[in-house]
Every structure is written in C-alpha cells, then in structure tokens.
Image (cartoon, helix red, strand yellow):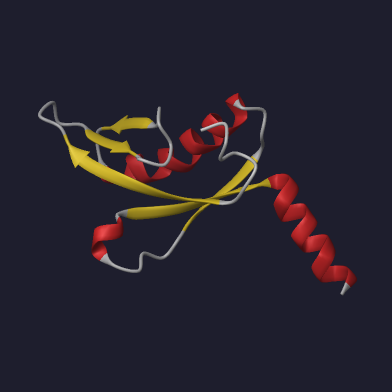
Length: 96
C-alpha cells in the first residue's frame, strides 16, 4: 500500500457474507483491508473509516468517498484522495 498512498486510488470493495452471520469487506487494491459488521448498512458506514485509517498508518490523510460503479462486476468502488492532492487541486481551480 505504501506506493499508492501519494496518489488518488479507486478501491474496489468485495463484500461477502460469512457463515458466522457477519458481512466482510476486502479489497485487492488495499491489502490489509478487512472490515466485518453484522449488517450491510453498518459495513458501508465502516468502510471509509477503515480506508482512512490504512492511509493514516502510512502518514497520509485522505478523503474517502463512494464512486459510481461502471458495472456490477467492479464491486463497490470507493475513491481515496490524499488531502494534499485535493487541496492542490482546489487551489489551482480558484487561481485559474
């Protein structure tokens, strides 16, 4: 993950229901991401915080927001944008 934290990243989330009655979220883009909650609503609320925490471990603050899926096979995509990049983009737009 350390090579990805300095750029905007689309994170595809794979959600599965476990035998224990929990729902699990993982991502091939963020190794180490594992979120488990008793229902889908709680899982969806916990995903952005878990992504932010993984970025924070690498010393990067990030904005995490859901993205529109282009097709059903892409999973549940989220976008993680490092604060530094977002601030730079806003500054460039206001100066233009």
